[in-house]
Picture 1 (spheres, rainbow, N blue to C red):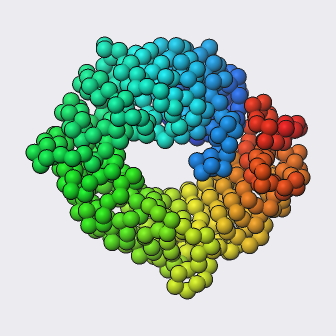
Picture 2: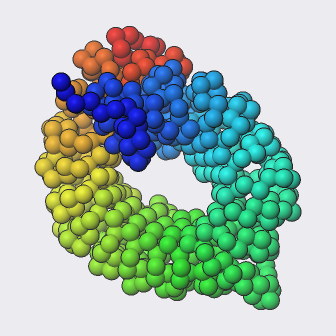
Picture 3: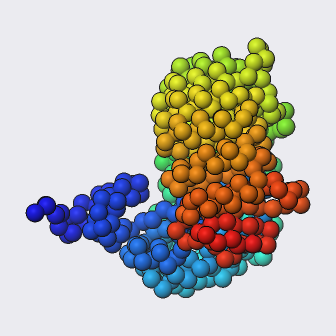
Length: 572
C-alpha cells in the first residue's frame, strides 16, 4: 500500500512554502495535494486576469487573504492597447466580497478600477489592510475617499502611475481622527492643484501614525511643508519628497537639512521634483545610509549629481536620467561598489550616455544584477566587457534610442555583444534587445539563455527562423514581446505547442495574418488569440496580436475592435 502524507501534516508544512511557483509545483503532485494546497493557500498571484475566471479562483482557493493581479498587456504603457480594452476588476471584487470577506490585501496592475469597485472594497472587507494600484485607470479621488474613510485597518495605500481623475482633496482628509494604523502612504503621482492638498490634515495624519515607515509625496508639497512632515515622522524608512524648488532662506534650508538628518532610519529616497541644484546639499546627511535612490524624475547637472552620489556608498538600487552622462555613471562606478540594480532613463530623444558609461559601471559595480540602459550608441566590445565583469546579471535591458543602430565603431550588427551577454550571464531571466540584429542573436539566445523567462524584441531579426531559435531553446520562457520584426505565420505557429506553458505572447507590426491567428487557436484550444484592430490594419495582415493561455474561454467584455479566437469559438 503506497504511503500517504496526512493532510494535516502537509498543510502545516505548506505554511512555510511562500513562493507561488513552489506551491504551484506542490499542487501538481496529486489530487490530494492539490486540494490541500488550495485549501491552505492565503496569497494568490494572477499574472493575467483573463487566464481564469472569478468562479475558478474562489473554488480553487477558498481561504485567500491576499490577491495580486495584472490586467492589460505591458504594451498598454506605451499606448499600443486601447484604454478600454478590458481588465475590469469589478467582477472580481464582487466574487471576493462574497467568498473572501476576510480579504486583507489587494495589489492591482494595469486594471480598470472604477469608483464603484473602490466603494465595494471599502464596504465588503472589514479587515482590509493594503491597497496597491499601479498603472490603473478608471477611478477618481472620490473612490479613494471611500477607501480612506471606511477601511479602519488600512496600513498601506500605494498609488503609482495611475490615471486618476482629480475631483477634490477629500480623500486625504477622510481618514478618521481615531485612525493610527498607517504604515505606508504613496501618492507621489496623484496630481492636483496646490490648494487642494490639505497639508495640515496630512501633518495630523502623519503625527498620529507612529508606525509610518513609507511616505511618498506629490510635487504639490513644498519644502517648508516637507520639513514639518519630517519632524512628525522621524522613523521613516522610505521618503518621496515633493517639489524641491521653493524659495527658502539659508536658515530655512538649514532647518530642512536638520529635519532630514534626524531621519536615521531612512534607506530609500525619491521624488525631489524640479530640484534647484543649490538645494541638493540638504540631502547629504541621509545619503550615507541610502540603499535606494530614485532620480528618474530629476534633471540634475552632472557635477551636482556626481557630488551627491559620492556620499551614497551603500547604494544598491539607482534610477537616474541619462543627462548625467558617461561622466556621471563613472562617478556611480567609483562610489557605489555594492550596486545591484541600475536604470538609466532618457531625458531627451537623442540620448546622452554611451558604451563608455556601460563599461565603467561594469568595472566599478561587480555585484550588479539588473540593468535598464537607454543610450545613444553601443558596441559589441562594450557588451562583451560588461558580460565578463557582471556575470551574475539576471536582467539585461538595452535600448538604443535610434532603431537599427550598428556597432558604432565597427558598423557590424550587435549580435556578438548580445551573444556574450547570453553566454556569460548564466542566470539571465529577462532580456530586452536593441540595435541592428540578425537571426544570429536569436540563435545565441536559444543556445545559452536557458533560464530566460521574459524576452522583449524590437526592430530585429532576418526571418521566421529567429523565432524558432527562441521557442526551441528557451524552455523556461514565460513572456515574449515582439514588435516591428519580420516574423510571420510560420514564426507564430512554431510555438503552438509551447504557448500553453507561457503566460503570454505579444506581436505587433509583424507579418502575421488573420488566418494564422485562427489556425493557432484551432491547434490549441487552451489559448485565446486576440487581434486588436486599428485603422491602419489591412483585411489580411493584423497589426497587433495578443496570445495567452486560459481556462476561462473567450472573454465577453471585448471591444468591437478586438477579435478573439479561442476555445473553439470566435468572438467579434
